[in-house]
Image 1 (tube, rainbow, N blue to C red):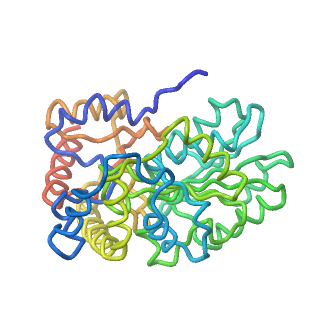
Image 2 (cartoon, one colour; image 1 turned 45 degrees about the horizontal axis):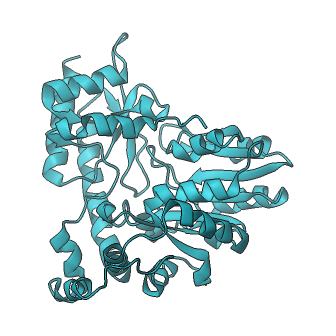
Length: 375
């Protein structure tokens, strides 16, 4: 197998720790440990006692009953706990789901551009991949349903979506998902939906693919919408035959996610609505900051994301200056971290992680504005 580098992860690994100002991350401002454990309502005493008293064995292999209950509460339909499998973030969930679903020669349709592993892993597994393309109409990112109808074949095994999408923030509403489900159902295909950004947008009426299609496989984590990427806690929910394949595969790739991680992850899920309220306020506040900055920065443009923490900035760069060179110049001159759009097959811009701490966002946008004005 030819293992293809993930371009944005390579960029972060090379340059993240050199930056003094970071507006590149895609989570809502990460919680500190004290803020996280204080969710227990006792200043962290209750969860600390639970951790102190826990045996350092393997714990719950598939995730504790309490963790699975917390996950199930995020969805409208009732879920059999055996279909919920704990994973190492959505990264592990996507990998295991795709490996369990795809054989060499299968036909897969992938929303694009999105998070690279969602279409790269199918290619590495030997699938024939066609791309359902997102475009910005000036106001929002869309992927025409008519194009999906044309791309799907009688032999299509899987439709893969990122809802909401990284880095554009594009999101499918319930009507979109129902249309996707109808197309998938017509050829008996699965739909894999990476939904790490979805929970913060569900107050706007957005729903999970799990709640509209019987052959949905959904992945999620506590990293993005729940501001706890350091826990590396994710999950996959799949129909029984796929869940059983993933369960076997996990014995090769994960075994378990760790005793403390399960306890802390369950704590976050038990207080999911509290965390989501925090994060929706951050998203709303930071979006206003960006909109104000854009109003006075003619060389930057965006299709505003729909209540999610990830976005793409289109930049007016002069001929001969590509986005990678520009982002390296930002780092070298200003200590500012952005990820070039070309890392996501969107050259000419950058991913903006605008839900960082407010002071850092103001500073980062000021520096970016200075750099653009100097071009």
